[in-house]
Amino acid sequence: MATCRALPPLRSRRASLAAILGVAAWLLAGCSAAHRPAGGLAAPRASDAWALSPRWSPDGKRIAYLTAHGDALAVNLASADGAPIRETLPPERLANPFVCRPGTGLCGPDAPAWLPDSASLIVPQAAWSTETAPPSIVTGLALLDPRGGLRRVAWADPEARDRLLRARTPTVSPDGRHVTFVTEGLHGLCAVTVAPLARVTEEPPIALADPGLDADWPAWSPRGGMLAYRRRVLKAPGAIPSETLRVIQPGGAVSRTVAVLRDGIATTASAAPSRNTCPRGARIARPVWSPDAAWIVFEVWPNETPAHQAAVWLAPADGSRPPQRLSPLDGATYRLPVLRRTGLVLALRSVGERTVVVRFAPPGRPPAARALVALPGSDADWSPDRTRLAVVREGKRRGGRPLAVVAVP
Image: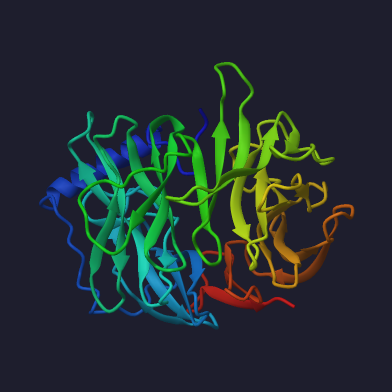
């Protein structure tokens, strides 16, 4: 089974070597790596640090992002205009920015995720487990209060038979009561998991019964209560797998499939096939709800490799009609789609090193994209009102402002 994301597999030579080197450093350091108290906030680090993964706060007043200082990551805050405010945690040494170090540290690049109060963040943590054979780096999630301290909220289970060792891609429910994330293991196994935020527990979280072990990209509906995610289904050995977009009510009775991609055909369980075709072996990624929860816009990747020649599709959240491709077949990559309250669908279009924001033609018309504004980079995040983008400026040296905030008409 294919890996679910672009993170390097745990079985890769590079990751194995990095893990061995990290263990050696951990042992030499006395088998612990405690955080410096977050109350003593440091100024933003060296200007040549790499910035990545910007995330808007729900109130639209701040932006959290990561900086990679060589082989270390730190969590940073910026104002709504992109100006750095402070670094909330000192850098932790990593084997590389995509593999977590032994001891208590950060891993990336799927952090951070804001809580609805716009004051706290969920960040991945890493630890070395000797409960597996051979020993493995496992990751969990911690609640970061920028005023001080980390509190564990979820942890991967190193003893699980499915060997789900990494917790990543966190997202918090709109009511702030639960965190949803993906647990990832060996051989491409992935499961969507929900854990409560109200209490600390050493018990590993339980994956949803619905998704099986090839599920990814959880996304809460605007008011909470419903969860969308991708799931790959293999009904029999040797059969052609189906890529599906699922909507469920965690702990409730609602469960439906709103899009199915199988053998180049797009359809749903209750509608005729779409006239649009998709690549064989296509993958669904980044589902995003409309403000009224009536529609879901998402990316379709030609294969498991992210972003390259990705397309933007749209489907009704009730599965009443087949999904429709909105982006034209022009060889460009379309990603980070969103829906505005007016019904407009926007996304990023990239060709080579040039990235622009585009607006798509309404559903029912031939796929077309109209350019709106150019961006200084492609690593970006939409503001809560969908009128601005926080963008990491391209190039390693960016001075004191690694982020740009671009208004989108």
